[in-house]
Image (cartoon, rainbow, N blue to C red; front, side):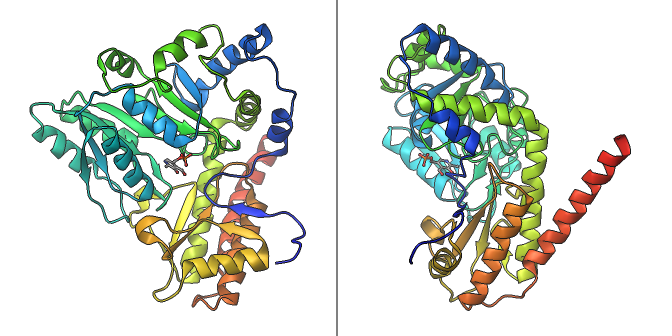
Length: 400
Ligand SMILES: Cc1ncc(COP(=O)(O)O)c(C=O)c1O
């Protein structure tokens, strides 16, 4: 296509739109990462980043993608041949299990249909049957980005407690942190895994681990080989704000800014905004007569909505029409749902009008691509957005 005027709509579920404030912060001159100014800056950052995890535990930040942070969580807590319990909810949970196998772990992978997440009762049953406590960790993806399915981590924790099982709880919060309620401490998560390019509104390039006390203790006995990902040299250097190797200095400037933005909006307001946009999107999907992938309303994601294409229609062709005609990127179907699903990302630096524009683009794209649907999805979403905005306006007027 020739020159595309106006703003590109980046509606994939990460990397997300990077706000101007963050771009400006990243553009500051790079400084000496072994100098005092950097040490003071990152000491503060390593403290303040804990808030978004709702934890008082240490958080380490790697120059890496989320996959690196996955590997770090495993190699720092487990030993060769250890058993790990994982659940198939979509492509990312599948990839994490593959990675664990390649590290020499024994993965007990509970197969799923990519339309629902693990039931807490299933977690409880498997762990109760594991009377010898051979399972050393339970790995759960909080928000499966490929299918838009969220797992209730508090429920998983309670199931583990009911089973009286000592396994570690490792949680991938890569596409939920900073967008959906996530409570590392309250939910008794042992390691939380995150990345920069989703709710934290940064470019890709930072991988994070929040490390609970039990995980720290497990680290002492864990024997999987590790070097780059080793928590200990990282934590030792982090005490004075430094890193054992060159950190992604400019992305860290960006992180300070994005955390400030989240603080200014208020974490609870950030969560409510994502919930509102997700609910509006689902109303649009239903009005179009299409189907959301997640079967269980209790497991809807607030950051991404995966939509099933009507049988016989190509999701990729539809996405390319939307890109060519309306300059908007939608997420593709990954793995088993390749070409069968498209995904609408509604996370990060995002507001009501951006969502309205996104849904108008989807609706127009469905018409141009000749995909059978009913009109009125964008209008249904706007109705919900309007009702929520009216409520907010009335309560604002009432307190004035
Ligand atoms: C839930 C989830 N886990 C893991 C990953 C892998 O992260 P990365 O691609 O940054 O390595 C992603 C990427 O989108 C993801 O959404």
